[in-house]
Image 1 (cartoon, rainbow, N blue to C red):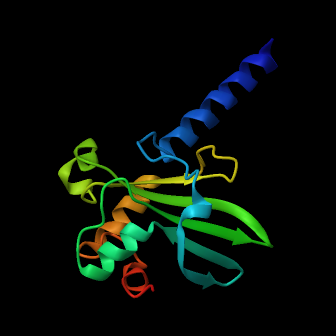
Image 2 (cartoon, rainbow, N blue to C red):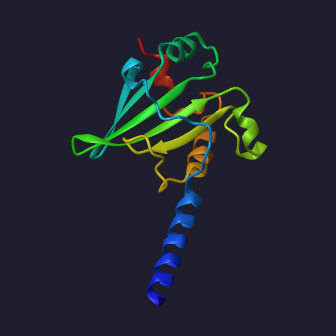
Length: 151
């Protein structure tokens, strides 16, 4: 009985700690990756990141126009020859209203997913949002210049 109570307490602690990192938000798992444009590749040591988005987003960036709502930007993280995880930025109408003004990235929200589509509970999406705030004026993207120059 005592070990069951302890195991339950440990499980509850782990679950509550994990959910403190990840957040439920409006970002969806990208079901259409094969239809998107692979606009750049970033290599960081043993990690290769393939970047994808829609043709409409690339055209808007090239024209100096805002990227349209409904756009997803996907970082597909490859390690040891297989997809490890996916980072998804998604823009929606008034999505910034979900956060306090100081934490907004206009109408972009962020989520990490495992390849099976489940949310990666180990990631801190508040940290993602905070870091991407530095890219204001570039659609909060670190690869905005590559997207703007994509043919």
